[in-house]
Length: 437
Figure (cartoon, rainbow, N blue to C red):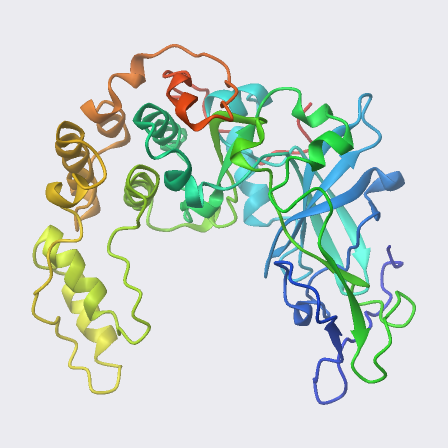
């Protein structure tokens, strides 16, 4: 659905700003808040819609959602061979031609797409287009279809130390000179095997974690209790669709990751050293199943978090301590001082040994301690990390294309050990114009 340029958007609330719509009670899918459908917000999309010029992308399922936009499983119907794609439709507020995600594409201009995906382990938009809708003008980014994110990879494959190290090795993209700025497991995707993007629809849908049938819920008007239509409420979708993803043990996943969502890459100010820190946190998540320094107490004002960092890295030095004091003096009943350190370090060989064997625990602890340093200048470089003994000389291994992951847990160790280093990739370029071939 589209509106002519210049047509004013419809409003989803009344004059006092009250939201007038809700979803039926029996809908339990994971979906975005309906309140995000408003002028400047999300574009209303339902299953079966056609997006892009000539209705190129047929909407089949929802892959994700957030305040930035929604992500949909779509079939590219105009491709010589119909292809499955992930189409990310940004909110109108975030839709700008010079948005960071499009600018970040420029870092890979002139590099073949297969190199970007297979060697660099990066997922960048293949193409983009615009949608004029009731809530504004929306940028739509087209990506290669991937599977689940890396949030829960330790619970899935943590016992396969070979696979864990292979996956961690793929995360280091910084020799490209691009700082990601938001490097964390939700922005790391598991790639699919070759040929999956051409599977029959019925076969592909059977691989989704929540079943082959999308979870949907009709949206109705609170005022009269009746289901809405696009004519009665153009700003709001007629149905909400629950998000899902392709499961790791679907038999369609490859032993390969792809870093995505470079939305803040071009405006990150801290530089590659901040990403090295974030990579250390990701290694811990993948290799050990937890995030360092995290604390679940909602009442913690930050002292507990800082104390955990001090327990590992020693007293917080200047200028960080001065900035910390200044920030926390603004909190009620807080003098800005750190609480006494009474906890066991959040990372230590003894704790790591609970998850892995002694020899690996010592190596992994040494690697993490080379990363978790207060001063960015003291942290290990990308080359030092890649050459660390914990990676078992993977930096010298030759490329072996993406391998299918066995659906049997006790066979995961058979996954290929080596992945080609991307360190010799070409230099970054300027803003990408057009799409990848």
